[in-house]
Image (tube, rainbow, N blue to C red):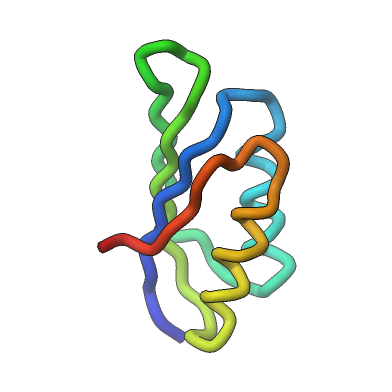
Length: 78
């Protein structure tokens, strides 16, 4: 199990956070920290998620979140 930080850019719509959290829950990951900040235009939000999970599954998490409706971009912290 490793800690990893990811950044998500998404539209600011109801249910987006719930769908992101479900991806982690289905894979048995524990979200340890979550920050959501709306953009100045209130149309987009930026999420920072720190979670713990199996190192081999992290790439799948990124792919699944990237495919979610309303998610524009998802990446590991650089």
